[in-house]
Image 1 (tube, rainbow, N blue to C red):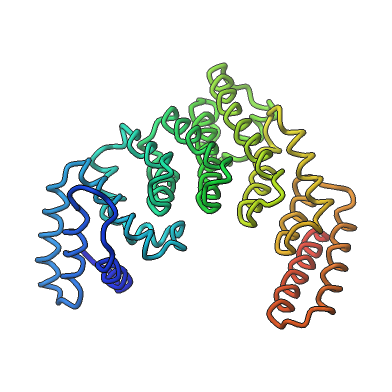
Image 2: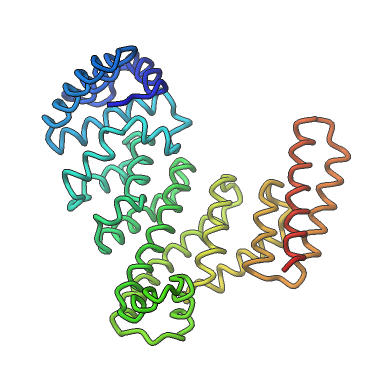
Length: 354
């Protein structure tokens, strides 16, 4: 059991926090083992590690799950602003992230789904569980139906203004990745696709050919893909819904635009034209958004919408930013504006080469 110095620091702080979870505290002994290992030599750490592993193995699956939840409740108190940092999650919950899927095979994800949906659980725990299910390391254990179940339960989080914006960003990102994984599985189930891959053709190229009906695929694929597209349609509708909110948080708006432009515009779904309208309107009314988002909109204009006046829009953005730079007195803000000017210039230069 190798424990990082950062983990020692976290655990020492956590030891000052009273657990918020009722009942037996299964996390406490784990925390104590981690503290014991601090500053010990290799032989001493080995002995502590053996006791630590014996304790982990003594826990039932339910107890291991509770221990992780108790750990997360304390983590949420100590570092609430890092609740969506993958490094923080993997460090705090290392004992759970590997052991739980190895034991259970994730045959039943109901306890995980229930806690993701439960707004009374800590945000650290809910975000960690979304990350946990959104990792391609877990997907090999999950069926398509389980993946669809996850997507269905993330949708209300994406749409809910009462949820922490970072939780909504994580739910949106995970939905995108899971649907992409299912699409990949749909393709790989086709013999003709596997044969082509053996001939070293790129899967993305084959996917584009399939979408353009340039490859003859079976009814099984068409039915499976129709189901996946229905989930994309719901995802697109949810993104359109939140993007119409004037007070939408910066990161969530950026994530929403990116998914709508990069994913939903490329699918044969009913809401595609509405998605295009929302994105086009956002590009043309860029002034109402934070300048840090203008580069996102410019990429969308050039690459996704392919608006004929993209260069004019870029020049207008530059003019606006340069005027703001001249009038701004605050050095930090001037540096930020200059950074945005550099980004816009880079995008213009990049697209002149194309």
